[in-house]
Image 1 (cartoon, rainbow, N blue to C red):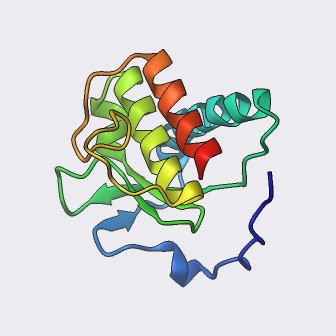
Image 2: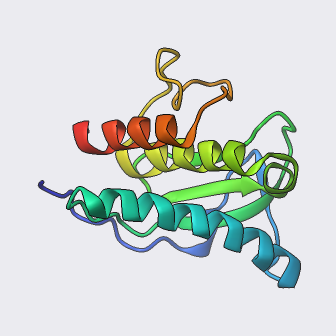
Length: 142
């Protein structure tokens, strides 16, 4: 599988988004970030089983200005913002869904698709198997 050339490292100013306020890194934020990172490692291992290496993704834990936002990612730019409220209020499976969804945006440039249970704009009930299949489909097809 051919890979796109990596973009140069971003400056700190490029790691912000209008709808989110980055939290300062402290023990509480680190604990929340660790939950997201563990889900990212699941995604990385899924891809590795398919002989596909996953690029590094920058993660920011935020306070959302738009409370209905569960996550934000910059298309094809390997950065995502996950609101602390999403991490604390969603179930483990729902958070996994959000992280996989945002990874598809950040890594593969996948757009919203209401026919795809993972890439819909609305959080749908999914199983781990559903999430894995949709994630791999978006990773390998793109």
